[in-house]
Image (cartoon, rainbow over all chains, first blue to last red; front, side, top):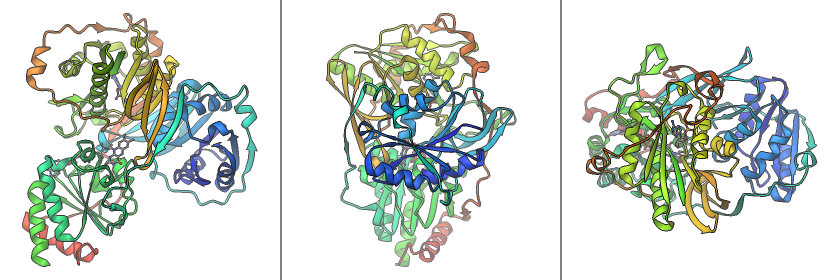
Length: 323
Length: 263
Ligand SMILES: Cc1cc2nc3c(=O)[nH]c(=O)nc-3n(C[C@H](O)[C@H](O)[C@H](O)COP(=O)(O)OP(=O)(O)OC[C@H]3O[C@@H](n4cnc5c(N)ncnc54)[C@H](O)[C@@H]3O)c2cc1C
Ligand SMILES: Nc1ncnc2c1ncn2[C@@H]1O[C@H](COP(=O)(O)O)[C@@H](O)[C@H]1O
């Protein structure tokens, strides 16, 4: 793979966690890869310096109009910079999902979304692993590389690379911005920070976390009873917040909170990648789920196959008996 | 406002065991219960709320086999105005770009101000919406969790970003938005509602009717191919407790004590 590029996210002068993972994945594909970073000012410069520790070559695109990440502005710039047949890696998170599919089309390249493993290129095709059906099954896939490729990688799925490179930083702003920034058909206004909420689940030592398996709003009480017995807080997966059964600050996951309890009791939670993304700091995960094949059992330390509506009251009773 | 919502019929993972079939070439679809992709249900609800506010009409479209019109009918019962069913064996095996190419052809046959997709479907890809926007050369936003009409030809939208923060932007119409769950509370659709639309005619479209170049869609055109399905043997997995419910609870109490979950 001659023309391998990696788009790197950064914020306030620090690289996104995915940067070192992407660097490792890139190393597995080709000896040389070029990191691309866009933004503006000292924050961008600091990020480029860090990226140079991970990649032999770093391309910088600096413009005041890029201070706020905007996939709609960036896409035409990357389309201009990346040569025909080039391969671009980026992270499958909120920005990557916004940028990547359209970028693949504009480059005329193939698209492989949310890869969890890459097995290298053979005969002009890249072999990879993805997950489908909420992670219940995986699939081997092959992507034709003949006209280039855009590939998003699942955050957390690749081991991070230790920095050690002494990369060259090149300013590509003039080339990327030839003719100026494109007219923005989508204009950034502001970012509204997630509300803090009354309970800070990120500080909790023990979390009783409920998912869609709780089945009914009234059953939430079973989780609160257990939490009370344990001196724990109640957190939840996204569908519980979507249904407005619990407030957003209690949501664990990539679009919620990252938690780091000593014990995380996942009750009726299937274990989607986005939910697990908020669990990387949990010391011990105990999963209770009625489906023995639920993906959460792959991540959990301890598993119980049970119907939580029946089992949680039993557990609460057993805890209270010991206290 | 003329709105097109792209919807997909997917295996209901709450109602089915997902098992491998045919040596991993597919999942076992025998007696499979299908439902609307969760994200698409939110997209249709959002379209209904917009239409009810500013007028216009909603078309729901799906690409799928003969039975896939069930999902269209369900969303007609919910409040969409008309359905389009793209159904043609020649389109089977399309990858994300193939599907987006088909949907772009559908979009070009109408005059839509706004096109909505779900943020992702059962393949967990999240690709069709962004590709469709690029093919139509209109602006796109992924993971939208708020939509307001801002003025003539402009929407004010919120995108969900990391940690649940919300990125607010203005976007020009026409555009494509991929809708994230939680944006609204999709209304209930009962059996009676579905019965009411049972006889509504849903036009079927095939590749020639859409003027599709056969080389741009289907199995042959796909650059991303699924080789097989498999069940991952990932990592050591959990230590599974066994016993009667009371025994399980007692074991868990001991584990909680050992791990600092119980003082
Ligand atoms: C961009 C993006 C960001 C996202 N961010 C997040 C996030 O931050 N957090 C998050 O959680 N999700 C997030 N999601 C959603 C995620 O993809 C899943 O849809 C979600 O995590 C599923 O939640 P769940 O496990 O509770 O529900 P399901 O996947 O429906 O699982 C329910 C589980 O409960 C089990 N069950 C059912 N009934 C019972 C019972 N009676 N007793 C025991 N077990 C039972 C089932 O076997 C199943 O395993 C995000 C999605 C996207 C696209
Ligand atoms: N077969 C299909 N028919 C209509 N719309 C689809 C189809 N497949 C995907 N989509 C749309 O694209 C969205 C994202 O799907 P995906 O890119 O497959 O994750 C879905 O939520 C739908 O809105």
